[in-house]
Length: 87
Image (cartoon, rainbow, N blue to C red; front, side, top):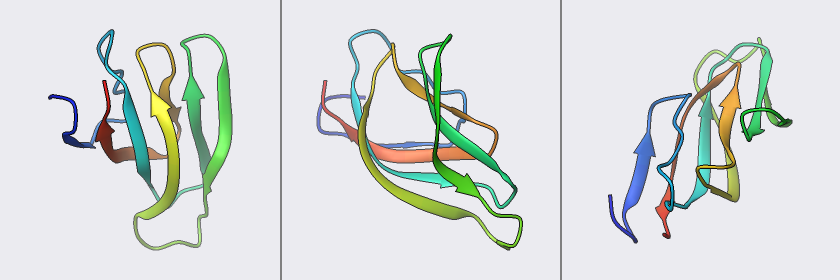
């Protein structure tokens, strides 16, 4: 990947390489109850989006935040995300 590339990740455990930064534009999540958020491997910020068991298909949350090797996505219902690599 290079700066300016569109990034589509279908891996809930994805952590960017050192020096890489991705602006997340949309997060895809499953249709079960749970939450997803950011983590640094120790601390976790969750509940910027949550699933609803009444949903019958994959849902999405529009966001704009940066992922780095230090702060990256995690969550019980996370399926993947799309964004743009800026570093």
